Image (cartoon, rainbow, N blue to C red; front, side):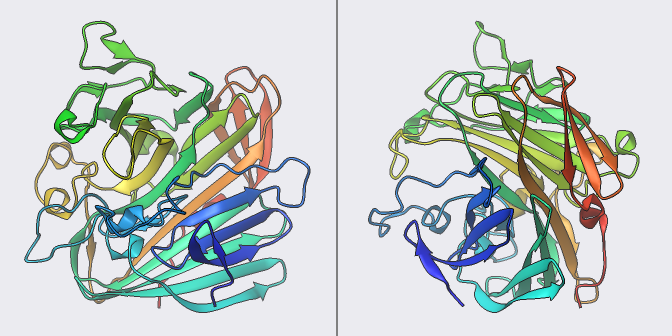
Length: 388
């Protein structure tokens, strides 16, 4: 059932002693999420768009109405072009339509779960959303089972983090990647009141040196955010499978002013890429109006944010053997999993340099040598049980 209205949206609520979360009925957007809910150090890492108490009647895209936190996208991307006579909304019906409550229960001692379901119409299918909390784990476990929805599709999680004001205080890092690339086309169009800083379709091998449109600076450090105010940008990295040795791929963001770290874990075989959306007051059309400052950390199988037509066709990434769409069949439902977490870190914890995976735990290791241990069942994202 819908528990309460939160930031203008009817929402489902799930909580335990370490995590409290809300998921909007419309679009299934997860926020607010409070990590350390019963502790003195509470962390609220996710962004909530500033127009929640405003009139939504003229929103240019349905996904913008509840826009917040993390949401599941099927098909991921803009979907501006029809694909096989299908016209999907931006980021798909899973991010824009109403979810139906199934149950919320303690599935076993210390493990609570919220389950929602959505029947898609543009392409017929059923998506079951399972969100699980475990006692002692400062972690949100998410699983989406996609049944039917036959054909290729881009898919992914669209996490949006609240970004601090001071330049360079948000430290971004990832597991090793085989390819980094800026958005292959225009991302911020001045004709639409948008402005971008990064070059189009340029490769890079280090987050600290990403090419720009300018001569000076020719490259910028995107491992330390926010950058210069007034721009909106997109770039992506593709995980290096060989270096992972069967462990999850990861992405991390450290708020060095508030001393907390957020991270996500994924199975790179299903979600090989993380796209970073840098929004720093760079969009001036409605409803943005130059007021949004946030960071999208989007774990996906997709051709950037171009949508199903581009992702299901040959493109710059598929030419390099990188999948940009997953195949759905009646006999083989998709099972997409994500772990997202946030924990306090000590003063001086500058960035996540690497993650050491142990038994039912992991260790965040900073560039400065400090460590934080987190209780988490990281094997969850590599699981592949039947959705049925």
